[in-house]
Length: 500
Image 1: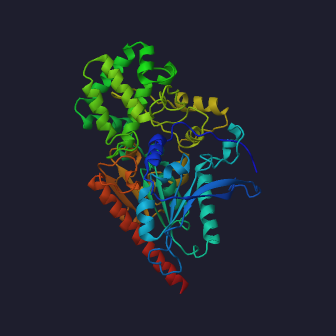
Image 2 (image 1 turned 135 degrees about the horizontal axis):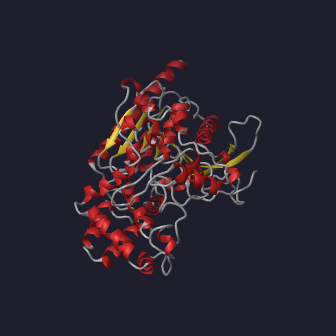
Image 3 (image 1 turned 120 degrees about the vertical axis):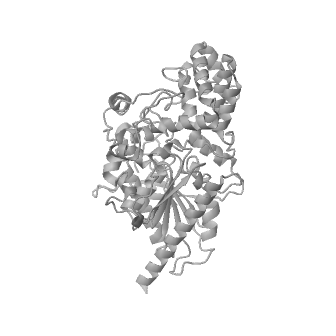
């Protein structure tokens, strides 16, 4: 077995792991449990001469499988596959209650949550230091092949699973993976719910035709704060000015960080800006761990309430930052984040993590920023090519259009000759990532669906139903469930007819 290690990146694209971890920690004791399993996975799916394998972790639950009405084709119940994205798969379990708490018991479904390679415990090279030359096996193509191979293995080894339909689910980059999995491997999954999948952001060639530009992401962030309170953007500017004018030592103390570098690599306001950019993604209607309900509203209340006092504004900014990134340990301080503050909006190149590699090779965000939160001008050479060369010693080849050219970009949803169907693209309009989502219905003959949630943040529909959910989110889940039930019925009818 090959041995090496891959440290997890500090900043996880889109999903913001701290909130997920809080959710998992705060999950009810009776939240459905999983079994952690390992599959001996292929290292390089595109080299037929290689037989190298590695231990691929996946979470598994079949307690409800077959407990509802059988499908009538010899299958006890459907298989629900979460296309694991950039983080430990255990952190995504408790944030997918729609699958786990609602659909699985209702449909009598099996749950399979594979972990993305190079994250969590799914480390192809084990426990040694993580070297840049070993990252060449980390790509969207390899990840999708992992999931195809795992599904084939389960269907061939679990009695009665061979004829069962598989539905894919994914949020954020996981939603991107769900889309690509259905597009490239329709024989593996019969359809998918791709929540908050910002595929359009990777298709810069299609931005103009879809009303997107380099500022779309940051403009949505600003709009969220402006809509939350008429004085919020002004309060943000005042807080920024207060931080810049104050002695750095005072700001370090107020924020509870270990040193000035933890405030940002170049400016003392960068950690605060990073928090402000993250909160709209997590703008959920109920508290999750230490994150209050509607955290954007809570942020505006804190900042506006501070008035014009520089001291109170800095204290409020510190509370907002800790709300987003976590409080320092008792008696201690918060160290500098290894990725995020001062960098490309939404995260990207900047460290030697697995996500840093993916950002450099195919998942690059070519975003600039303007407005009260911060100003940032993206430059392909300075923002991406230069740091990628430095961090990965020239081994990471910058291909910002790779995913679009390989899988289709906007053409997937527009129906412009790209063969994909049975995908639901859902987006919450509070989420800055929705700017790169598929929002407008394309070819009505495609069999695809577009679901918008005006009061939804980042893939809120994947979370379990909650009494405080806005009506549009509740309605979105009901619509998604009905659509997927139709896909299952269609599959069973076709499969049964074909085998009679």
